[in-house]
Image 1 (cartoon, rainbow, N blue to C red):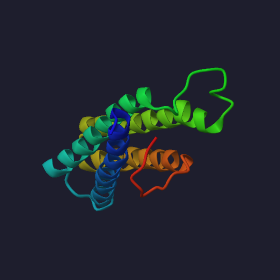
Image 2: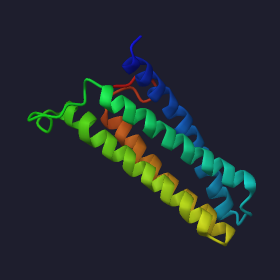
Image 3: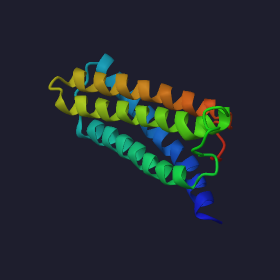
Length: 149
């Protein structure tokens, strides 16, 4: 098995960990925000682990990006929908989602009122999940399958 194949399967598998952690963080933050609950150490750790898993996924994705045969830089990159998707669109959307997660985590850390902490996570992590799901669906690959580039 080549480095490309290993990274492809790892990247495909880790997305489930990222999505699970981010979705649990969103649910927990919505409950905290709408239920006027305190912001606990457990909340902070879950939100941090969700962000760390997303950053780890980006690092795996960046390594995969430079090994993938689908990523091509040339005159036809923007003309071919598949090549454009893997070379430009996928990475741009995923970096944008990671920025949203990082902003949400940062705002949550800076907020003083517990509801504001929960609200920052709920809004920014939810926006990030929307971007991630759209990016995955645009690949025209099975959403729940372990595949990849």
